[in-house]
Length: 121
Ligand code: HEC
Ligand code: HEC
Ligand code: HEC
Picture 1 (cartoon, rainbow, N blue to C red):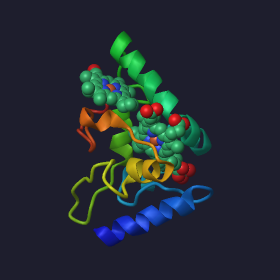
Picture 2 (picture 1 turned 90 degrees about the vertical axis):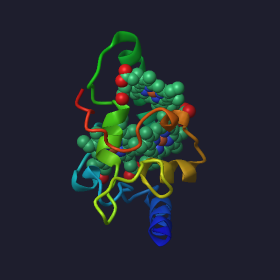
Picture 3 (picture 1 turned 45 degrees about the vertical axis):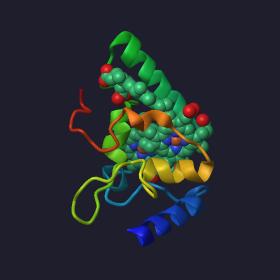
Picture 4 (picture 1 turned 30 degrees about the vertical axis):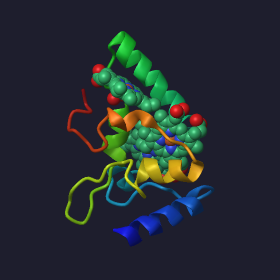
């Protein structure tokens, strides 16, 4: 596990400019594109998520393409035992890049870090 996380963390630093940082074992790994083009996602995902939160929480609209549970659903990876790993665990998709970028997001104290099976809501 530790070795895997290390390899991933290194992979992400290298991926910053060219390669993809999607995590092996996630749905995203099998797909070609995110909900928006990758360069757009890299730059604007915080805006998309915050906008999504506002329309969900204040206007009651759900199931749109920028939902946080949707991100988790597609980007969470399974381990060798087929069990989902939290997206904010060391070396996993959201965390590895945020750690590299020095960003902390306080969202996962409330939001699920693995797919809940309800993201289509
Ligand atoms: C104190 C608990 C709490 C924290 C911390 C929190 N949220 Fe939420 N969030 C909620 C609740 C409760 C809802 C409403 C859940 C629902 O209606 O599905 C929600 C809904 C959302 C939604 C809309 C539903 C979805 O899955 O898209 C988004 C997007 C969202 N939050 C993003 C964030 C982000 C980004 C952060 C961190 C910057 C964050 N939240 C931190 C409690 C929290
Ligand atoms: C249906 C699956 C899916 C969903 C839902 C999804 N993504 Fe993605 N995401 C991908 C794929 C596939 C890629 C890699 C695209 C590529 O290789 O260019 C990606 C790439 C990214 C990247 C760029 C990574 C890099 O290499 O620089 C970010 C950031 C990202 N996603 C964040 C999010 C966030 C935040 C959400 C929720 C708002 C989300 N994604 C929802 C599939 C998804
Ligand atoms: C390719 C690198 C990368 C990936 C992958 C990535 N992020 Fe980020 N994220 C950043 C950077 C850089 C920032 C801070 C800069 C900014 O706000 O634009 C950020 C900021 C955020 C913020 C805003 C924090 C705040 O307090 O303003 C949220 C929310 C967020 N990311 C959610 C996610 C989620 C959820 C995932 C996984 C699905 C994810 N990110 C994956 C690079 C990434």
